[in-house]
Length: 314
Image 1 (cartoon, one colour):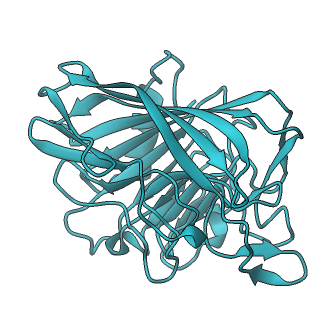
Image 2 (cartoon, helix red, strand yellow):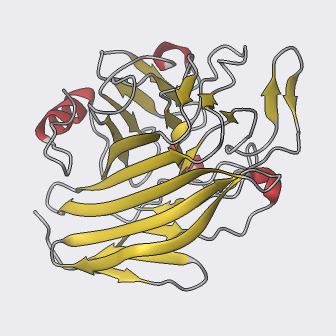
């Protein structure tokens, strides 16, 4: 149950700031000011727990193209909408003139009140050469804040329509030959304080510290990331895959070593989108002010529903 009225301020300098009852929830930067080789795209940062802890990282020293929480694709028919160099089979990572951008076109809705906050946006995915390949409709919603239990939920929906003349292939470095690197899709990069945390999967697999291998590529309806015990204040994030998403339950790209999670439907198998066809991706992210156990994460996942009524965490 919501504890207070939501507020939405913006758009100053290409961003919206969202809060509830005076507590900041997140900032959505829809007109980013970053170098072209970072594949400019809208992102959420900072993302806060109700205790005020920031759980996203932005342009960290190890990967400058990691931008908080954003929708990405490292290999889209040869174009890079992830940022940085491209993995090339037999060569490794190579900086190519292929860093595409997601360009803001306009708002269809930007509203906040007692029931929540909603942002409805139109974007274009444009290659570095200037061709528009995807037309996107994006919706960001917050309707659930439980101040007593210390968590709130962020709902995301992305509808991508292929406006190119040929089929578009969504891939990853793993589909190009690099093992255990199937990143792409919705990607969260945590703050440096969250590195070395613990990953819990719906299938019971656990990974923590610098050991990324156990959870990498595991499929499941949900995945939880819990901050390391030294992090103060404590925090946990619960990622939920919608049952209607392609290849549900998604294979997860999860790296506790640097606090990174990706809902990677193209993890190890390319996904083709025909000309004129649309792809819709829906996710729920629960941000908690507390060091959840696996049991707590599983219970919360089982109790939640998506905005369209579909059960989460099944």
